[in-house]
Image (cartoon, rainbow, N blue to C red; front, side):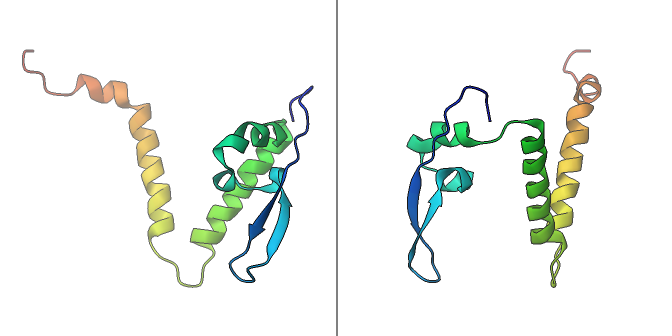
Length: 108
């Protein structure tokens, strides 16, 4: 959390699809996609921006990806193709200047 920032805790009732009962969760624990635009600044202030908090966010993202695409009973090509596409895009961005000189020109 940023030093000097106020801790904003808002509570919102969310209905779960399974039980249709309202559960109360704090704004800090909500996912980014569940936050409304008006609540976005206060949601950002509640997040942990220390190196430990950022490392934890990357770790949670890795485990979510691993659970969704790698550790499944019926695997598909989707997980591997996502990693392969990201690798190809990264390499293309790294060597863009080299490719730029090899493009055919109208007038040499």
